[in-house]
Structure formats: structure tokens, C-alpha cells
Length: 464
Image (tube, rainbow, N blue to C red):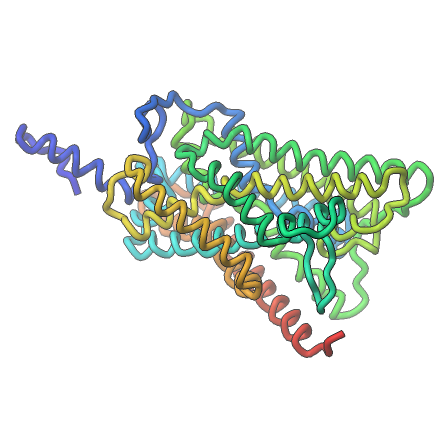
């Protein structure tokens, strides 16, 4: 480490340079506000609204489509209560990360983990982010391909939106659509060096989520007025052990609904006023909770007991309202566009953590254009190949993704708090952390068991 009290003027510049190189273990490999990026442009700091949009987009991904089915299992009142409760736990875990980062003067999640648990702690966090984010991005790309180009199951091809509109051609096949999207959307957005540069695409992404919500609410309201829907059940119907166990199978969906911790430090580092991070987190969680609750409410109200695990699949049929087919297409296209714009915000921490894992002692990534370009190209290629040529990779990520997500969101922040070298945590904080660890472990075990059972059932079932 750099000796702070060094008096040798000949070593002063060397010491400062060494500190700049070693910063990779502490910061997210990017300049903070009012520093120059690799292109020599001065950055005066990110705005509050831009930070809110970026954090909210990190939170709201593909999982939103599973929430109506979750409400169908839990009932409306317990489901809404759990959405609010998980938002509270997420705010608590992020607040603990920020408080301990301030005390440790660590400007990154990985830096904080290294301060508390050494090099092993940092590597463990980075591996979890890589596993989680690569899995998420591969799944996003698969869903985008399914929505736009269709999917083939048991030898039967189900056309996507573009093939329904124009017919089946080479240019709207899965490979072509994903290649075009990667080259002309993902690659340019992934080439931006500051997360604040994604604020406009993040705002558009949240707007598209709201479009889906407005359409859902509009259709549900119309059908409610004409008596076309039944009021959803408020509480779960438990009659035996199987129905009781079924309640727990949806817990992993809610536990991982707000995972955004890997982007908090990057957003905080770029804020014009660092004291705003608490407000940014709270505003984002309120916004996302509102979207989650409204989506769950209107989705369950519209489709009732017919709500599928992925509510998007319900938009393949006649909705019983005028312009049903048009509304179906708008929902599907807006959802695909939403995921396309979420992609770069999830890719950003993936690249940073990969760089920190491979080059922990190099200068900040933003200052090395060759390293930045190589990592960006390599990771996008990896995700593209995984989504196109390794379809079974989704199965692997169902198991590893749940584990990595709960570690990032709850187990690591709780472990840092319980370790508490500085005596920062209160008794209430430690009790909450013990609860969060127990909840995370329970959620992960349920997720692994549910995925294993579903996989075994699929493999044992006779082909159609």
C-alpha cells in the first residue's frame, strides 16, 4: 500500500502513481465525477433523476412477468405485503453497504469485500456478479429472440412478432435478429464508459415498462366494467401439504426481485452529490415497488386462475377486447424493447468485475481503450454464443443464478455487517442481517429444489 506519510519529494509522484494503479481494488475502475474519462472529457457528476432511472432499470428486468403468477399462488394481500417487505429488506442491505463503504473509504462493492474478508472476499463477490449477470444477459437475449423471431418446441415452430408481420425470412430468424440487435444496439450502448451515459436509455426502458402496465391496467379495467373478470382471491387456499409447499416455491422470485447491489457503487461514484444516494435508492425502490404491485394486481385481475408462469404468454390469445391482436403485439414488442435497453445497464458491472478479476492491479479500465474494447467484445460475444448455440445453458443458470443473486443482495452485505470491525452496526442491524441470511439460504434451497424437480419431471415425461 502507499505510505501516506512519505516525505521524500522524489518518491511523491511515484507514490501518487502507485496509488492510482492500486485503485482497482477499491473503485469500480472508472473515474468519478469531475475527473476526465479516456477521451479527455470532463464529467461534472450525474443527476439525481439519471441515477434513479439507472438503478430502477437495474431492478426491473424479466422477473416482472412472473409476478402475476406469484400473486395467484400467494393471494393478493400476502403477495403485495411481501413485495413491500422485500423492498424494505433491499433498502436495508444497500444502506448497510453504503455505510460500511463510507467507513472503509471503499468506493466499490469488491473493494469493501476485500477490506473485510481479504482477496478471497473480493474474488468471491466478482465471481458471483459474473455468474449472475452473464446468466441474466443470456436469458434476456433468449427471450428477445423468442419474442421477435419465435421459438421451436417439440418440432413445432411458434412464430415471433416479426415473422407474424412479414412472414419467415432469413433476416427475421433468431440468429439474424440477435446478430443485428447485438451489432447495432448492444455494442454501441456497451461502449459507453460511464453508467450515467445510459440514463436516457434507462428512462426509455422504464417508460416501456409503464406502457406494458398501462395496457394491462386498461384491458383489466374495461373487462371489469363489462363484467368479464372475477375479483382475484385475497389470500391463498391451503388444503394440504402440497398446496402449503407451493406457497414457498414463489419466494425466490420475490427475494431476487430487487437485486441491484452490484450497480449501487458505480452510480454513487458518479453522483454530483454523494449524499443523494440514499434518496436515489429509496426513490428507485418506491418506483419499482409501484410497478411490481400494479403489474401483479392488474395481471391477476385480467387473467385470474388462467395466469401463466410468464404472463407474457397470456398475450398470445384473444383478450376479449377490441384491437386485441394489436394490443398483444404492442405488449410483446415493448417488452422486448425494454429488455434490449436493460441489457447495457446489467452489462456495465459485468465488464467491471471481469476486469477486476483478470487485471486487479491495472490502471482504471476507462483509461485503457484496448482493454476496454477487448473485454466488451469478448463478453458480448460470449453472451451471444451462449444464447444462440447453448440452449441448455439456461438450465445451468437456473441453479447458479439464484445462488449468486442472494449472495450479492443479502448474504454478503449481512456478513459484512455481522463482521463489523468498526462497531458501526446496531443490534437491530445484526438481527435483520441474521434474518436476511436465513431467508436467502431458505430461498436458495427452495429454488434449487423446484428447478431440480421441474427438470426431472420434464426429462421423465414422454415426448409429445
